[in-house]
Length: 342
Ligand code: GRE
Image 1 (cartoon, rainbow, N blue to C red):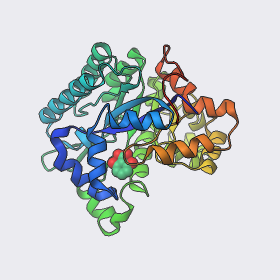
Image 2: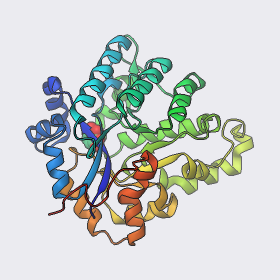
Image 3: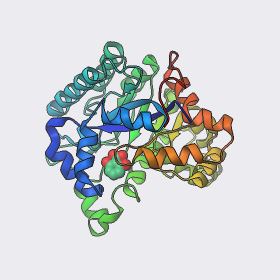
């Protein structure tokens, strides 16, 4: 399929090459290629895209990124540097590359202001945040965004009419020591990423974020971070016990309704037709978006899978690009001219 749109596509600042190499060494079979690919913005990845029929990519800063920086001033300065850098790098490639803002999440007003600057000044298409913000003098605090302090941030997103991508980061501090240190192979894609993000996303649901901000749009990667699989069970538990749990006050609608109106899921790093078909049943083809998770995954695996997956053509077009065009209002985007498939 030509003109696919992908939106969980990572980059890193070239000046952090050592840090990037360390992160790659934890996850990649070929750290050197990974470092080259992740620090490139507009050459290697556009060549991959041409080869595999990807017309447009929305780039975001790699995990854990700014969410790993405990000092609020340092985190804010780095977020601004990253946003300015990315805006400069995608200039002249606007037909192929878009951007999510990187945000320091220590302070809701500061995050809202930087988001607004990126959307209004640079035309960024929303923001991507790597789960909780690490904070505190020893880095052991975690800031969640599911309480009323963050309402100013959520109203800025809905006011600007852009989504937030809630992406994972690695467990740190006491949480890492207690849960993961003795089973470290489960950190990342096998388990910890989905646990972190699903806790945060369901925290937002149950703490009333979507009741207070009914227009808010949140994107989850990796086919929904395990939540679609549990949809029936969560629904069953909440709906039967809403009053008894005291949940009726803060979570007025059903989990399925929030997923129909407030969430999108992407195929990033999860290239299984079985799982995709299952998710189409649970959340619907209108709320699923193609993505790769480059360079943690490669274009060939993602695109060969998607292009050959046995799906009806209408759903394939929706998932491959039309839903993203709708969500990001990419009006001028030309499906078939934007990329060349070999
Ligand atoms: C990511 O998406 O950020 C990621 C990592 C490490 C391994 C896999 C992965 O940071 O998808």
